[in-house]
Length: 108
Image 1 (cartoon, rainbow, N blue to C red):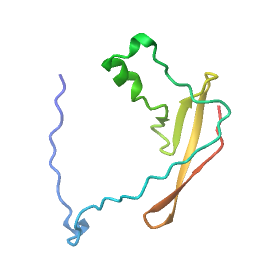
Image 2: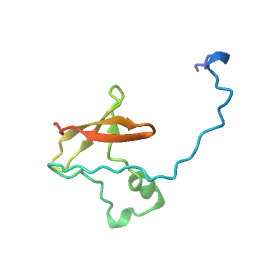
Image 3: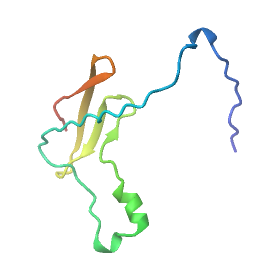
């Protein structure tokens, strides 16, 4: 059995802001973007006998977008034709604390 390494963290005082008062919660709605797709996203459909709590946890809260571990602005999904599709989303900071999303063309 492996044991986790023990290390101590040191504070770099010059990097701390003494006037920092905490984070502020914004009540503005989150932006929502829509994109026309060649084929719909493949969804997992439950049968009539699969409506148990375990099934709802497994399939009801399923996210159909899968993030790419190496490219943070790239996500994947499977469409109804069985294709693995790639979508690149770029957030461009237009104003301070406000970002705009742009989607590039989908590819197989």
